[in-house]
Amino acid sequence: MGFVTPDFAATLATSAYSVNNDFQLKVLLKDENFSKNMAARSIVSATVGSRLIKVKDAFALFIRGTGDFEKDAFLLFRGTTGRKGGADVITDIRAGLTISSSGSFVHSGFNQVFTSLKNEVDRFLKEHSDLINIHCVGHSLGGAVASIAADWIKNTFPVKVKLYTFGCPRIGLGIDGFAQATTMRLGKENIHRVFHSNDAVTMVPVFPYTHAPVPNGAHGIGNGNLPISVTAHFMKGYADSVSGKKWENLNDMPETSLSINSIKQWLSSASEVNAADASVWHKFNYALAFIIQGSLIKVQAPFIGGLTLADHLAMLLLKVVALSSEFANWVFLLIRKMMKMLGMAALKTAEELTETLMRNVLTRIMLRINNEVRKALNSLF
Image (cartoon, rainbow, N blue to C red; front, side, top):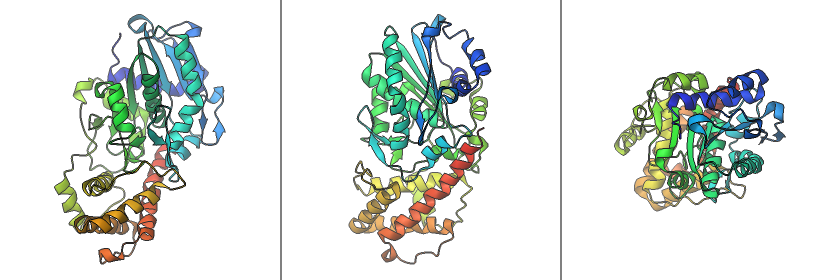
C-alpha cells in the first residue's frame, strides 16, 4: 500500500472540486497514482439541500489506484461551491439528528447527502471486491460526508479504511455517539482531521456535537486567539499549511488547550466578549461541555422529534439549574456572557434563567456563528 502524506491528502481534497470541470478532471485522472481504466472510476451525484446535483455539477469521484496503490481506492467528496445548497446544509440550525446507516446519531443534513449516494458507494466497492484499502477524503461539507461514508464502509466491507478531512464541521455526538463509534471502528490512527483554529466551519454545530477522533488526536493548525477568518476555510490555505509536513508533525493538537480552571476564570471575569475572536467560540463550546458533562446530566440522543439543537440545550441547561446549585451558577455566567456578546441586557441573578430565555439566547448565538460559516462557504467559489 502506498502512503498518503498530508500533501497528497490535501491534493486529493482539492481535486474533489474538479468533478465539475472537465479540463481539471482530465488533468487529475492523469495522476500516476490513479488507474487509467475507465471502469475503475465513477463520478457520483448527490442530493444537497433540496435539489439533485447532476453529473455536470457532481459531488464525488471514486477512483481506483495503481502502482503502489494497486489495491487501494480513493473516494473524494467535494465541499460546497458557489451554489448555496451546501451552505444551507451546514448552517441549518433546525437540523436535528438522525440514525446513520451504521447506527449512530448524526446531523440529518449530512446524512441525507451521504444516503443519496450510498448505493453508488456500495456498487463501486462491490465491483472492485479485491480492494484492501479505502481512502475517504473531503473538505468542508465533503469532509462530513466522507466521515459518514468511511464509518459505513468499515462497518459493511472487510477493508481497511482511512479518513482525511480538512475544515470539516462536527458530525455527531461525542461519548456514546458517532465520534466515539467511528474512532473505535476506524482506529484513531486512521483518522486525520486537519483544522485551522480560526475556521468557523469547524466550530459548528456546537456541543454536544463532537469531532472525531476522540479524545483529541486532530491536526490543529494556528493560534486559537486569531480572529475568525473567511480565508481560514479555503482549501488552498489548508494545502499550504500542511505542505512539506508529516502527519507526526501535526499530531494530537486539540481544538483548544483550555482547562476547566481557565474556563471557570473566563466565565467569572468581566472581560469583553468579541464575536470576531475565534477563541471566544472555542470557550463557549468548551463551557457547554464542562457544564453538561460536569453536572452529569445525560445527553439524550435526541433532538429528533422536531426539537432543534437550541431547544435541546435549553432543556439540558434548565435541568442543570434545577439539580445543581454549583453548576446553576456556571449556567448563569455562561448565558450572561452570551447575552453580553449579543448586546442584550445582562441578567442579575440565576433566578432569572428560564428555558425560553436560554433557547432565545442559544438560537441567536448559533445564528451568529453560522453567519460566519456562511460567509466562509459562500466565498469558496
